[in-house]
Length: 167
Image (cartoon, rainbow, N blue to C red; front, side, top):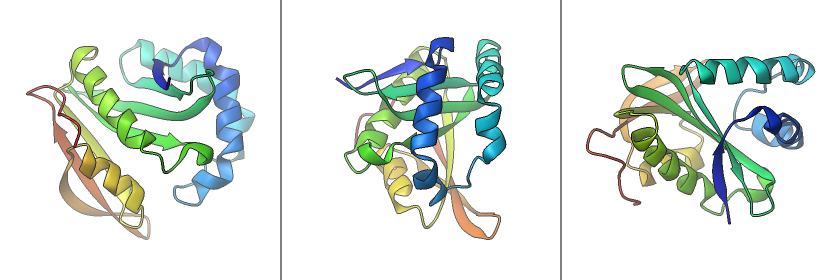
């Protein structure tokens, strides 16, 4: 059974393997993390855990039935009872509705565990998969923006009435 778990110190090795295995796949649709990310991964992992402990972010791994990492879903920049949702799904797990499921699950966590009342998201307009995930999860378009030279859109989801039902 697929599950979502909060990022822990013992996830470092599996998370690094996930990021390395999917680096080229992710770079096709979002900016590459760069070599420095991989070279200093252990230090960065400790920093992320400290930021999570301070309540600045909530990081999660999506794991398959064998405990393998098949995605990440994070609530970033927690402020004023809101956060930005970000996610990435392994190439081998893409196209199966996993991102939609994970976003809907993290909406429940956002309300029940973290006391959030709104989520933000953004994506480029050419990322049709991500735009579909946000639409199916109840996010509403907020404004069009530019990400460098790529047109994009910002979205918002009101959680003040609780997590939305699956669409």
